[in-house]
Length: 99
Image (cartoon, rainbow, N blue to C red; front, side, top):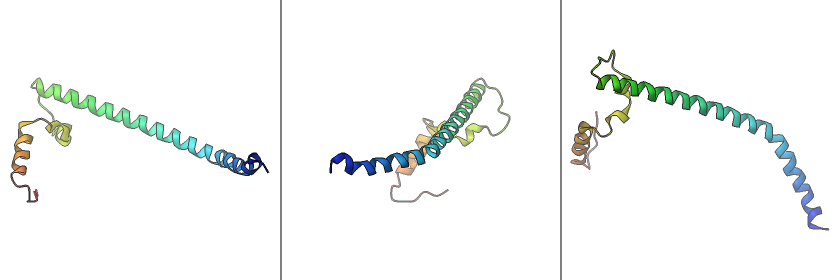
């Protein structure tokens, strides 16, 4: 017996599994790719809306409602209020902060 004759059934099984699972895997890849593209488009749309809203706020234009920015924590990054809050929380490291 040769190594090739010993591995032939294994190679055949591997090929059978590749043929069996290739279509579902390709469909899954396609679905994931489409979903990622949708998420990226939604993210770009959201970022563009936030940029426009920030521009409006900076220009002094009135904001019609409690802006989308109010729900996006990234707006707080680098703000004086956030720095003060963090400093206050750090004064009490052993205590739980509840709101």
